[in-house]
Length: 410
Image 1 (tube, helix red, strand yellow):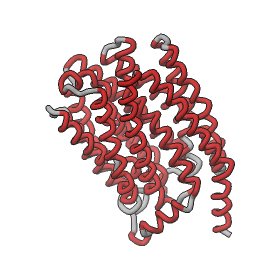
Image 2 (spheres, one colour):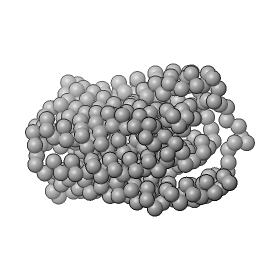
Image 3 (tube, one colour):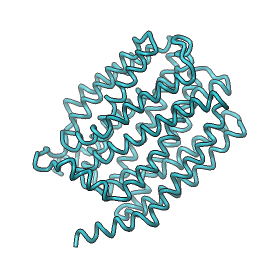
Image 4 (tube, one colour):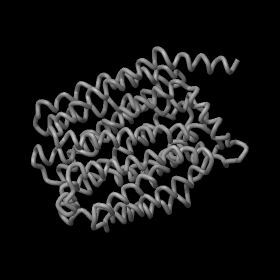
């Protein structure tokens, strides 16, 4: 990395912070206006779940391709292209008049957004070494949480006052302006050369040879179920259970969890760098431990407490879970060289969104059968299993990968 790149690493993070926040605002804002969509487009509960599932499934199918491209082309250019495309799709969402049109646009949103994360996370990892990498990646994760809160709150406020369409026009316009700036300013830390691009088969075989990668895929997919079920249904839960306005439900259904996640990834990234920097196994230990601590908190849904108490419990769960999940990407970065990281993230995103999308659809069926309380309580089991998977990897899997890596360097 050049001296100029080292000086720019925090500026790059700041720009990607804004882009990441917008990425999640655009994908999650729609949940805050579900009641308006049900009224205007006559969508059932399963139909609402399908909105999330169509996005996640298209994102899943195309994410591996996005990761492969991000390891072989300019990551900064991919970020600008993805930002422009998904912002255009978001703006067009405000024009739909039929459910089928909405489904098509959610498919396109998944395809256009999938290019962003592999490229953006690869850029951050390239600009930041082990001493600041988890901190930087944690800050970017915090931006995603901020985007969820902002998207749900803005969509709910505008929905109460002006209907559900203006929010998508606003988000789309802001994104197009930011994409233009990104194209002009953002650069890769070093030029990409064809000689550095290894064949795809070599990359895939290398990933298949890292057993810990499969542990990360498994735990990340389980956490994705929890994340996307919450993102899809919490605003509607607060609306139906507590009778809140759209704006209040959109805020309550996003703020508690995502504020907790934001605190968790920010402080957790610093903790990970201090406790686990250069000690790969410690990152996986932290991850599993915090998942197991966070899981039982979700049982609070059984008591149907006051809004403030439930919000506090959701905040605490989100913070503790994020203390664990922030170790995920730094762990992969220490196990994999730069030219394989985006591909690894692409396949991980595919797994996360496919499983997450399936979880959202199944939760829609469960909602019709028994309500959302049981759906949220069941997520305690999902998060606990993710924690056990991490601890199993810490004890049995990661040590063997580290031994093989040490032997290959002899």
